[in-house]
Image 1 (cartoon, rainbow, N blue to C red):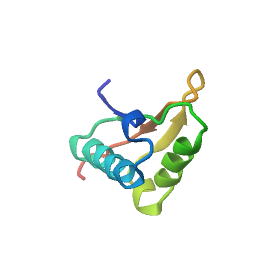
Image 2 (cartoon, rainbow, N blue to C red):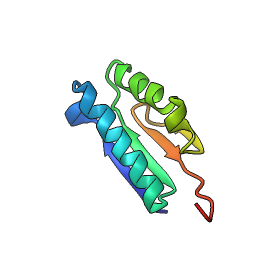
Image 3 (tube, rainbow, N blue to C red):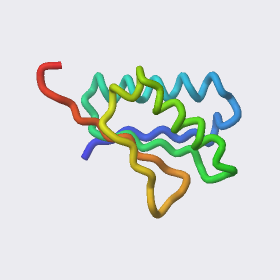
Length: 88
């Protein structure tokens, strides 16, 4: 299965850049009809993961994907699943 991966380790303390990268990877998944995006906020204090989840809950973003899955084996990883319909 094709997927995109966004590792946020290098920009963990750059709020604007994090949001820009999240927007970019979501738009890329939609335009290229990629079924899954793996986002790696890392383990740390959990603040970055909270920021990513808050971003994904925005109504304009939430309408673009099907569901978010938290990795049960790795706290520092999220999967965003897309259900692309035909005729979009």
